[in-house]
Length: 487
Image (tube, rainbow, N blue to C red; front, side):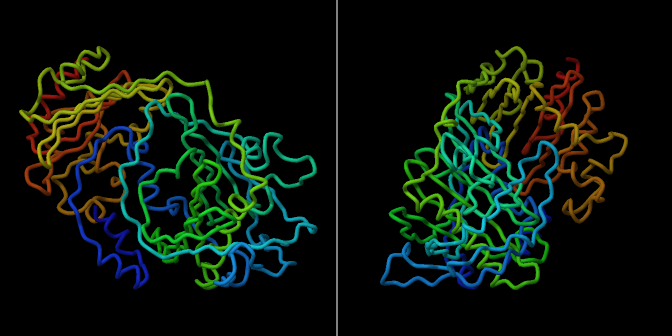
């Protein structure tokens, strides 16, 4: 927790943004339901940390200042650059991506494609993010990796890349030298829920999200954006400047979102000042963002094309079933051996759910809640590689320094040796190594009183059971675990 606090303590915002933050009122937060969040909140974490989790920012070409809008004229009619100007993207030598990582884009600007276009003036307002409603995936959703050819059809239409083009993607995007990853998430009916394109070039990154019928959902919202009219399309833009990854460099983050032809777009890019000056980095980030908006929102005779990815009939079998009682959950025979026969606590609030998708995951959880305390058991049966991850958390029961809270007094990042920190918060134990003493070693003080523990148990058949318990004793936790060890 201390590392988390230290990370945010490093962040810096402008005085105006600070003043708006201080003016916000706090409100009670209702406990959220656990299931169906972005990969159990993984994607939310990525958004909260920003694209900086990939290592962001690299100074771009010297593009000069952004154009200043004439308030008496429509933004789209203003010439923004020298008509002979072509951005220099040669300062970042492209490196071929690792195998199966993505596609290296080659989209050079030809000499006869000089910038005889008018760049719209977007209103990038500086602000702060606010946590939005819980971002839940649709039931039965699944992810499909797409090809470069799929993306070319999105940008160029059903025929894909024109034979006359030497560029992999429209040059006006200025994605030359970027390595991109492309994927689509579908709902349980096989309908497109969101298309995602992630790109990286050195330390520069961008993320494009497109959803049919609405703006792409997100974990964070910015209430301070202002809109600009781009050829009849209302585009709302945001700008943030702060050190998001603690590397001592300012990251310039630009976001634009809009609806066009029934599809919602969000384009976020990041540029970092590495010595050429923050003003130049800010202008480069804003112009790069504007290029995409100009291509996607301005030219009404060449809107993007989605028919080829709008639906798929190749839907993996799936199930999402809630349970009202422990008895209902125990009727699922494959999970029964790992669930207690009776409720471990006399708490009235109960939640249970089974989530299954062929080749991806198969888990069932039950949870009892009382105020700030929970007793939760998640049983993960092997499905695809869904339980492989937990083996990275495996600790040696003969090395108590790797899991015993009683040996340390203070935050993990300050007291636990570096070689044990990654798995210490929630380590995994082999079923044969479990004992009451191991459970006692995992108990530590809960900030609302009592004790709390988190750990996994890996069974010989590959099943992984997760225990997250607070407000109960080690003996209560052990009474849930012990019967399952003989299975």
